[in-house]
Structure formats: C-alpha cells, structure tokens
Image (cartoon, one colour):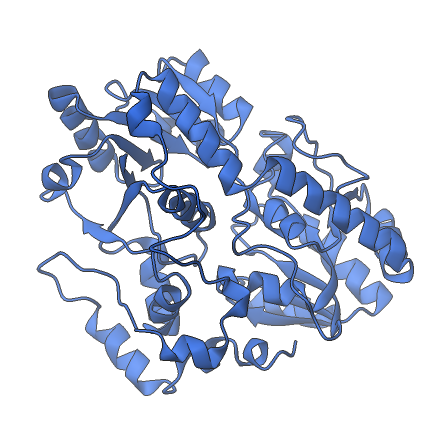
Length: 435
C-alpha cells in the first residue's frame, strides 16, 4: 500500500508531540513493507523554532537516528503531484485550512484513495470556531485520539464516520535501558505551555521536590524566565529541549517520573492522556500522575502508575517509590507489560489497517509485504547507537523538493557560529552517560 501523511512535521519534535507517534507509525508501516511518504510544510512552526534555537544540527541528528525516515516539502502547488498514486492519505489537524480543503477536493475528483483526518488536540472543545473552518465533507472519516473527540465530530455532524485511534509508544525507541547507576531521583519531561497547568506544576512538582530535597531535572521548551526561576527555587535543574529519541536514556538515569496533564485534558477530555505516559511506561520507569481520570480504561491506576490527589499525597507516593525499590519495580513492570500488550505503534497500525478494511480497501493492498521487522534489511535500536557510530553514518538532510533555499540565512549563520559538533552542544551530558 502507498500511504501519504500530511503532518506538521516529522523531523522536529520541538513542542510537537505528534511527531513522536508519527515516527513510530511510519516506521511500523515501513517494517511491514508498505511505501510511506510524509509531507510537511516548508516553514512549520515547530521546525522553524528548532532551527532558530538550535541550528541545523538537530535535523542532521534526526536523520542519523532515523536513517529510514524522511519527509518532503508540501505546497498547494505541488499537492496534486504528491497525491498521485496514493492508496491512503492521512491529514493531521495541525495543517492549514486551505491545504485540508484542497486535499478534500482532490479526493472528490479522483476517488482513487481513501482520505482520513487525524485529530490529536483539544481544539474541538476549546476552539470550536477554528475547527468548524475545516472542510471535511469529502473525507472518508476522522481518526480521533479519544472517544470524546470522536463523539464530538459525530454529534456535530462534522463528519459521517469517525474512529478512536489512541496514541501509543514507539517501542523500537521507547524501552527500558540499562544504567550503571541512577544519578537522579525525579525527572519531569514536558513543556511549560500556555498557563494550562502552571498551578498544577507548582502543586505536584515544584513543592514536593523542594520539600523532599530531591535531585530533580526538568526538560522542555517554552519556559518563561519566571518558570525557570521557580524551578531553580525548588532545586530543579532546567535542562531545556530534549530530542525525543534521547528520552529513554534520560529515564534510565532517574528513579521516577511524573505526568501532570494540561487542564483541558483533565476537565474537558478525561481519558486522553497524551503520549507522554505511554512513553514513560514503555521505558519501565515508575510513574506518578496528578489527578487524571482514565475514562477510556487504557491503564489501571494503582497498578500501572500511581495517582496523587493532592500535594501531600504526591510527596507520600514519591517517598514510597524511593524507599521501597521492590514496590517501584513491580509498578514499573506492570505498566511496561500493559503498554507492550495494548499500546504500541504495532497495535495502532493493526487498528489503522482494520479501519481501512472497513472503508472497503482491498485485502491485497492492506496485506503486509514483509513482517520480518526490518527496514531495508535492518533496524538500528536507538539506544545502541554510540556517538562514534552516529558520526560515521551518512548525514542525510531533509529532502527538499522546492525552489526555496533550505533554511533562513539567519539560522544558517547562527548554526555556523555554534560549536562544530551540534550533538555535544545540545545534550553533552547524555553522551557521556551522566545526568
């Protein structure tokens, strides 16, 4: 099957969690022998911010770590050519309204492929006006990352058919890694955001860490100066942006982690955890969550992770996990088992192919060409790539099929001014095996 993904970005995960899931899905489809093409806009917000803040090094690193993944620049002018010959097209909701509409019109004229809209955000509840601008009348259906989102599309008659398609962990990348020793107590990986969980972060992260005197790190982007000062005041080291494929290595260096969901996912969209808990559990690290109701029964609270209903309860959970290693290990193993049995990108590809069958796609198109788990004859586990081996691999840059220059001149000059090895510039302590 020939599949096209029109998404915000494959190469940049700067404040862009959907890239995590997209990489895992594309990798699994490729492993089964399907031909996959990913299209992204020339100046996506995430990619542009990544280049402006870190230069071009992270893009090179991405292609070292994912040698089989690449994307093509998409414009309205090139759209018809890029859609030609595809059997299935997925369009993410973080796309321009014009692009979404034009792909739909092409589907109406050609009818040669199935077309699905993929929604992984809370805007269908928090920004209905913006969502109503999407023209979906020629789409075959919606893939929603939670039951409530799915029901909204159906009840408001934005679409005729919709399926729930939860996010999941890419277990080729996210899995337990050995560590010589744990160098920290607690690590928080997440973005500060737009004030959607500031109070919660202070209640469930900053105050407990300060009260217990923990060795703690925080990774993420969009932290204003005030937030960095708050972290410093709590004794938490702010480490900045972390490439997502390096998350398992960081988890391996800490004893516990926390999930503190944004307010819309607690109040308006219970049951949608976002991708962070899937990835943490897949790495086998004990997880504590601030109040979150698993309305869609993805996990089992108390067995896969702990839930803290208050600041004092958060401190009590942290103490227990740190002081009772056998309990912490049992919790981590139960969560890991749940992910491996139900919530991997392998499971989600199975679900996607079942949806395609419901849409009437022929079985010979859906059948995998190969199930040997290899990509072009090989898979390189992310955690086994040493810095030396990574440097020895070809430096593949993103394929640019556009008349524009690859990057803004300012970003180019900035990257030249920075240190020769961007890998050591971005996360030197990880390559040394430290914290």
